[in-house]
Image 1 (cartoon, rainbow, N blue to C red):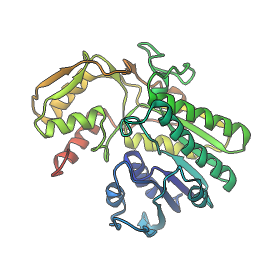
Image 2 (tube, rainbow, N blue to C red):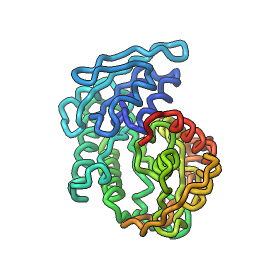
Image 3 (tube, rainbow, N blue to C red):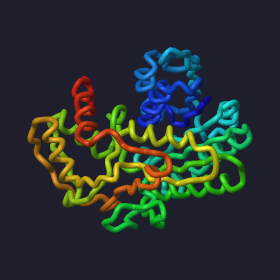
Length: 333
């Protein structure tokens, strides 16, 4: 299997590349990334190679599990459709992880963020259709639901009501995927991922890595609102498993939630972090964030039933693993 990973140098992308290298079915991996998120450091760790800071990046052949996998790195912006089409040629499957989020582009309006994400997704979908690629996996988010579920877990049948720029952009891209699936024979899967964390998330401004950075730098843990808001924290390896299972599908369009199905409040997360670190940091209460979802937990019965998905990394084990990794780094900021 020849797989293209768009956004393959980032947090989830690097974890996915690590998983794909271990799969005997995979013969080549093409990584398309503009390196806006975190550069090449994580990929270099996964591949065990160093790459030049500028200029063309050479393809490498990686020995893994008794075979050789060809890994190609294409340092391109998905907004440029010409190289996108070039790299989709001879790919059996495309995994679309690339995104532009308001957090990293705060000077852009919600409409601009949505437009940029739509253009990137459109270019990939068009290239996939033109190249005859049979499988496409798009990584969306539970943020598309907003607070639609109240205090219940969200089902795929729950009507999305996004109220953040991020959730709206993801839903718009989902719609584009559905339209392309209806017009082609491509097998297209949309994965609505809960709150991912894990290796290579050190730089992310998300609850788990952010609080771990505070712990490791003797900074107060910041809790927004009353801390009773709940999340479904899913480890990157389990997200990778969901992607891999989606790549085994062979027809039609499908949408799946990806998470653990377990609800954890921010206050409970703080308690877990204290337990893992063996420390008792101060907690600073801040006003609630604007556009924050109160309750977000995935119902994973559909993906478990249809694809055999079963998350394997418990929250405490996953957090401890990330804590140990970050503690071993000299610069965790």
